[in-house]
Image (tube, rainbow, N blue to C red; front, side, top):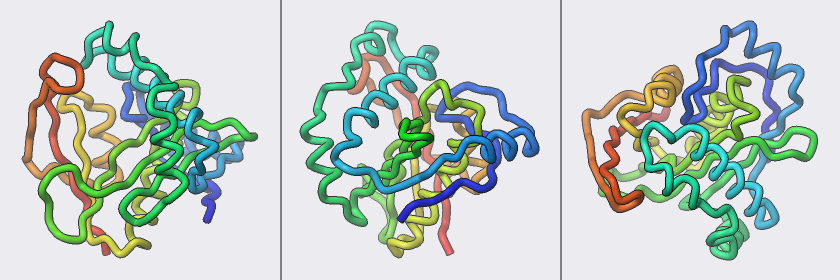
Length: 203
């Protein structure tokens, strides 16, 4: 199944861009011809390249510079290809294309931490820096919500860097609520990273 973008609100990429007005975003999307579709194994490198570019551009205030510079888009490609070759309700990834160029993706999967039944986690939502402030992040989120509903989940949760206010603004505009849960870990970067949890109840 593919989704053609028809309208949107601002895109925050899990990033730091200022939002556009609704009219500006709608115009940008109408001109873009962007298609959101299920990712395939052949998309693995493009997905990894988007993730690395987005992290390096957006996470400078939150993560060590040496960690971000060391990110390698070719790392773990075989593992990602294998996962993409066998999508399911417990692991699903969609990618956004424009004229055969990949611009963003999201990933849904089994929650990494203890959670309520019938819950899916938004593991990732990344947009290539060249597509920031285009409305794509919002559209990817809407597609993720639609897909989670299709998979018969009752709740989506996600974890967000606590100081990433642009990303938090996107989630709140999409109807997510702050649960008040927080966690801190240094496992990923070697320095403390503080995150907050958001959730969305599905109909």
